Amino acid sequence: MATNVLVAFYSRNGSTEALAKAFAEGAQSAGAETRLRRARDIVGADVIAGVPGWKENAGRMDAAYGAPTTADIEWADAVAFGTPTRFGNVSAELKAFIDSLGGLWFQGKINGKAGAAIVSTQTLHGGNETTLLTLYAPLAHLGFIIVPAGYVDPALFKAGTPYGASTVSGQNQPPTADDVAVAKVHGARVAKVAAALKAARG
Ligand SMILES: Cc1cc2nc3c(=O)[nH]c(=O)nc-3n(C[C@H](O)[C@H](O)[C@H](O)COP(=O)(O)O)c2cc1C
Image 1 (tube, rainbow, N blue to C red):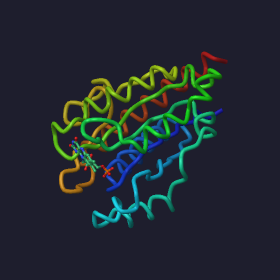
Image 2: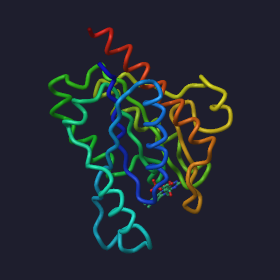
Image 3: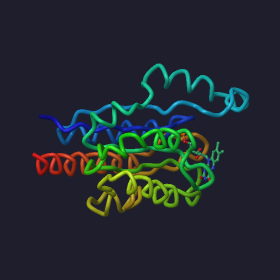
């Protein structure tokens, strides 16, 4: 049976989305089936309307990706959580989805799944590591076995972080080829660990 990898992300400008897609491609290269889901906006329409492109981007992504659900988490053997940083922290939109998982947590249904974090920041030192490490906390509470990117491939010496794949969007630049390479390495690694954990569960 295939290993199932869910990539649940939030993105407003598309860079986290692109990183999530690369992560999913890496997981597929390791034999996994993947689902990409975009957490829905929770700020007011006035905020979204305040920046050119946000409304259009949201419409495009919501048409392309369903919202993540608890059923997606139950389906998944591994979950990667992707977020743009918000003041060095996880976006409220992704956190709202994480906070909807209390029921599954209470039933122990997340215990033992592989979990990972990926991030997009605008600036090089704008909080990519703090955001990734902050995501580790709810992953630990929920019972995920956290799978970092590690320095497991030469790609990690060019981009990304050992905590998880990352990209620096600057003025809405897409992930670089080096960022994409790290996301693929991380996705493949998570899929392999998830497959091993699944086999061990029997
Ligand atoms: C409210 C808010 C807070 C932000 N805080 C930070 C920050 O602390 N550091 C940073 O580098 N970028 C920050 N950003 C920028 C986004 O995280 C960055 O542009 C990211 O790459 C967007 O990802 P996306 O293209 O997936 O939406 C912030 C953006 C918003 C709207």
